[in-house]
Image 1: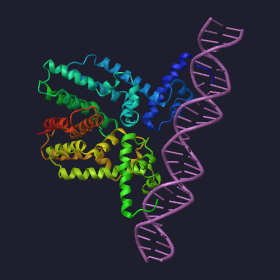
Image 2: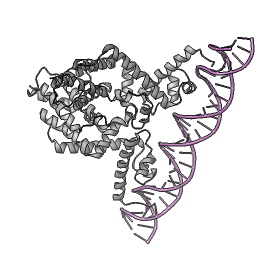
Image 3: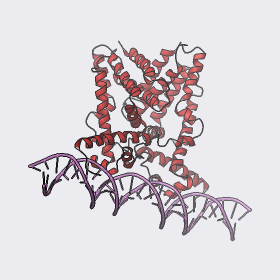
Image 4: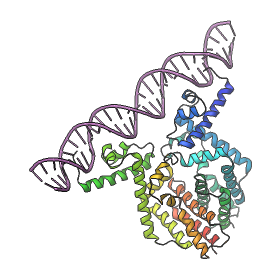
Length: 203
Length: 203
DNA sequence: CACTTGACAAACATTCATGTATGTATATGA
DNA sequence: TCATATACATACATGAATGTTTGTCAAGTG
């Protein structure tokens, strides 16, 4: 084959990321071959090795790209997160994203069920700062702390526990939704649960 | 080396399972070598292949053994699960098991973060009947349905959603605990959350 | 219009885990 | 006590994925 134009190259890079998401989410990261990824988009491993150093870098760049898309979309739907109602709105936006967007369903499914994380732990070191903070959803606790200072949450509430509860609940329910155990729409089950927990800590 | 006695053989089989749990939970299933497992207990791959057909069967037998231990221990602590309070007690027993028992922490960590399940999905086919039912915690929904028939739960409550909520909440919070995101003891965060959800559906 | 470099494809070498086959000394059972 | 199966260790063969190298041809560049 011959040389492609710059725009074509940019496109194949995107194609590789798209193919990687598909293959990784189907076969799992460890059993996915770079050949699988290349064939999925009608290319060879040469293309993959040209655009990415190795399988690990491909994973890192895939996560970065999807994470960036996700935060952008969420920020569009819920631009400011201060009150408890904002928090609920943000969680619901996440739920709707998983329900309506096939790509993000693949991504979430992949990240939850198709990677052996302790093995790939060094991948996190390569991710941009702030990623781990977002992944552990550490921002939620800060929002809750500020809300408590403003008097929206009762003073005796432990915001760390409350944060763990809300985040854990969402992650767990989303996971059951993604692996097919929960048959009801995610937002349908998540919304009342979130509201009940929030009501129980509200001043 | 020479032939061992029957009792010694039984012991090495147990050792292999123990070594597998350690290695799998540390390195992840796919990157764990049968050589790793054997060396961990001071043996060679020959021993592993003598006791188990292949890596997959080792995984299946490991899961079966741990699952059996788990259900036995839980049944000791909470012999009968009928009321909502029984349910809470069972969840708390699970939480305490994770907090106090290192082996079960390894097991839960391994099952949650160190296996690419869609890839190893056929493993489930080899597991004894009822396992999937236990894993998806489908028993919870039946308990809730009976409690609703007895009038303990308000009739307008959707027990499927309630079950998803309780189970998802526990799984999610346990997962955050296992990967070190949640710093508080698991039972401390789980108990109030469970009680609030249960209170909100009680008649 | 040279000619350099970019964007791959194709071939090659290497590693490495797996499965199997073979060896072996002893526990066991008749 | 003798034959045999047992409980492994060791050696071997295979395949598959990886990383690298080389080839190739057109897109850029001056």
